[in-house]
Image (cartoon, rainbow, N blue to C red; front, side, top):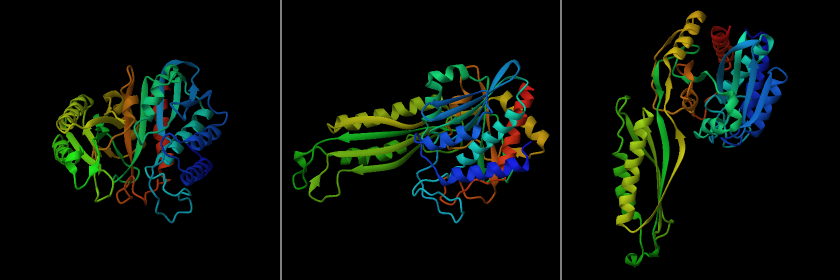
Length: 382
């Protein structure tokens, strides 16, 4: 277990990290802080994974499976509203999802592993970049340096406001939706507003596309057939009364409970956009962003979590799982030959919600999260 001195030092590290948040893909300083905090404890430290990712490798004396524990390095482009002395020092950026706490939990685990290595196999602590925009896990996995780190087991946790402090939500099967941001751009030709017939405006196409796209997924109960299409942004031309516009955009987030239906949802949305563009003689461009696969907990990996929570006397149930929100961990838990699961660790029933401007990670979760991961290591590797 962590000592009182460990907890004090780790809490200080977490608060220092909180003061200097970095956005997805920009985690240069955060990664450097992690490497410095790891020191000489790991047997190997791999840097620059998928961007600014860091992997700390701890090796057992005997052959055995490889366990991967994942946390996230990035913060959010949200202005923090807080009176805390460790509040963000960078305007418009904040650790308002708790990734600073998750990172600190893995550093706590690193301390315990450095003092007492696993009996067998390997433990990989994966400090992942760019979770918030869905690009980080895919970039890490695609990095050739990750090939020799391929895990047999993958575990993660996320703090969860609305769940009792220190309790957990845990469930087998789907826990987070797949989602992707679809940007539809329509280009025509400007004209004088007095002579719109001489231009090609995307106005009517956009007016028809917005309700048509929204109708592709209307939400409802979370199940295998769940679909949701949310219009998040639309624009048309410039703010002028004298110009009939040429340029228009629609941003829509597509969401499904499982990965397979997402392909069909994308195809339907593309077909709608193409039909409107063709009918109005508009040039169409479609691009995808913030691409998250579905996240599901493998039964055996979930059972390992449950056994550890039982041994620690931590209360858990399914809570509000599965969630509509997406989680980049799904790409690790569905790797070929990998069994993975994520647990949600309660931040408190009345704690500010994730991504709220007044959110802050509860420091009391640092030793709890560390101990959960440490017991998983001992349970599987000895």
